[in-house]
Picture 1 (spheres, rainbow, N blue to C red):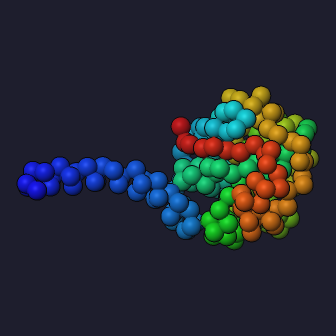
Picture 2 (picture 1 turned 90 degrees about the horizontal axis):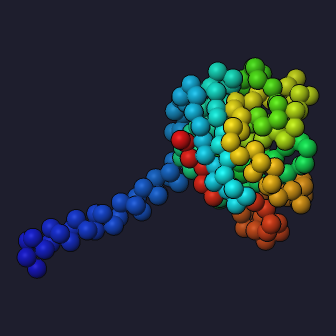
Picture 3 (picture 1 turned 30 degrees about the vertical axis):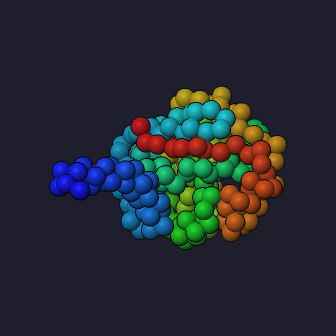
Length: 210
């Protein structure tokens, strides 16, 4: 093989390998929460492409800085891709944010963020981190308010953004299973559990910062 032929072949191999590398990098980052600490812009939008259609979340960092930063890093690094909407309660909320890969989710189990003061309440369309009763327990789970849920405001639930496009899509997310999916089983078995036991769940195909 001539030198020029070898050069062309090498260039082609590099080009072919680049997409694989680009796809692998976010997954590697997802298993190291400590590396995903980028500060979010003052405002930004995130596009969610889902099995029910698309919707857009507009984030305001001044509403809840810690929540906005965590959400920004999760979206930017592909955490929500292929995540199921596993808890859907009509007239209340739709919840998501347990990664479909248990090895990824386990890395985030104790990667909590500090509470934000509640500046913006849980109005219809507002987006908020779920949390445990203990303070500073927010990690990766998110919910979108179907209704004005002001009673959550006194319970440390600080909204960080709102759905500005596609709330009609959010309203269509499959709710037939209600609260049946077991969160412990999702944590341990991921999408394999949900696909087998709750195959009709809608899911996020891809979430990206716009």
